[in-house]
Length: 256
Image (cartoon, rainbow, N blue to C red; front, side):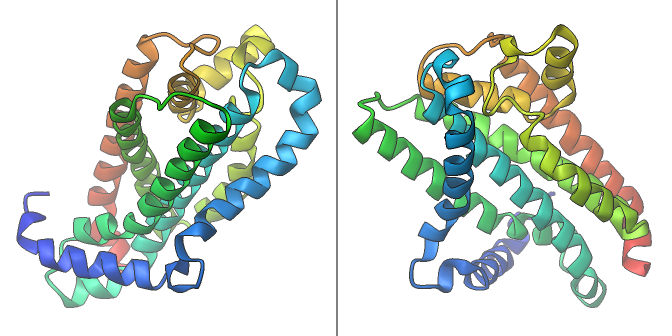
């Protein structure tokens, strides 16, 4: 990580390359970022609004912000998979640190998330007469969420490089996150064992609870200030495990 300042210009070039190769070169550009989450929101809203909407205050806002976070997580994991898979030639034939490749791969998911959450806050403030939420706190939680997601992406991407079954397993399990995350329901609607499973085993849960609370400016069920600590701990643990796993397998990954 100490080499990053030395390669800062290279990092900028790689970030620009990722951005130019994404959908930002299209006519609508960044607005495409909002299409996927908006379509998912529309489907889930009309399916669950009558079942869960009356029991969840500000149901549309909480639903949409949860979808945005889940989409951001999936993009980060996918970016780490690709960075590890396609960086072999760069690492072998140049002195570029692998950390530079991973950080640059995060540029497009971060920009898309920034666009989505900015549009979301703007729309909710203008149409729903909400007050502007605590932006610094939103940014802090987003940063922790980025670290946690990157750690999981590094872990899965590293393991996938030596056993391609990991990608197949992840492809099968990733859609289940929509139903094991408190996005269209709240934790108090679950049975005790279901609530414990979603709260402790799903690494997305603390970040979703934090964002829903900050956006709604009222604590969602089973949210407390300890959830902020949980988000911090999950971020540090997952990033540490993911990075250590990659460094341990780095030589084997390059040779594979």
